[in-house]
View 1 (tube, helix red, strand yellow):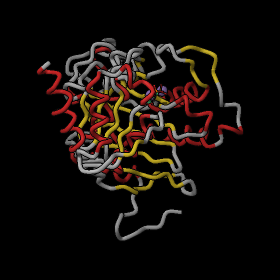
View 2: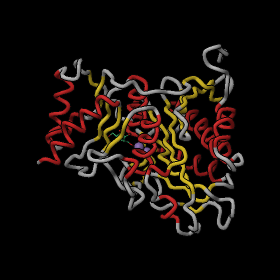
View 3: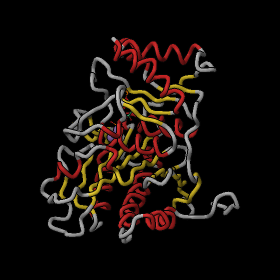
Length: 341
Ligand code: AHG
Ligand code: MN
Ligand code: MN
């Protein structure tokens, strides 16, 4: 059971968001309503994740999703739960999910519908059956002025620098919600005895440098050559210490470690995914928003992820995200070398 401490005030995420949204004149409780949709849905998802082996929720659902990936049962369940709870909020006009080909219009004609939420209901699905951490990501965008509900693409195809909030839940050894509304990054641990997310990581800051790099080295031969040479630099000690490698294969878990410990996470272009594997709207953008809010950086190998103008809802992007020292070195060693080439 959570114990109040002098260091960290005893706050639920709902209480915290009420304080945060005072920064937004006129946001009449919309954020707390949106966030309560996220917290309710992710509590139900984590309950299924925690008991996956005991209920018929493991394994394949049997369908192939729009990504061409075999849907896991927990992908489908998580998606349905998020659509249900977020769809109950009058302030939500559009939902877009990794698991759905097209954006969903939620409140036809509602004048209050001012937000689009884009999400990956279950990130790291390949890890579910082997009891490794998975996550949920979300990104909140405001309706562009003058855009009607039926122009759903215009709501979601906005650059990441337009996000008004973003976050993730990592279902790991504990369940932690991490979010930002542009005023720093804050983490909340789910207390199962209370059924509430309790503030545990106020004002999270990414260390300027870390001990780890994180990349799937199995694909190294098909990375652009400078990426492999950059990894060799990290391993050589030229940045002050010899890096260790950590790779979980769930972006949310790999990023959460990078946020806490520092270092760099990379998903480079590969032969099978020349544009990178990670999806811009609901994987790279929320992560990049949080990274920058915590003092880190996120680029696509050339430019700031948050400045990319999306052209399609499921478009992919390479991602290099992490601490300032590692990212500055990447920009000098890889980006500048490629511009000279
Ligand atoms: P998802 O399960 O939502 O499809 O995402 C999986 C992603 C991401 O979580 C992870 O970083 C990456 O796939 C791992 O890809 P590889 O197995 O190719 O390393
Ligand atoms: Mn994912
Ligand atoms: Mn997913």
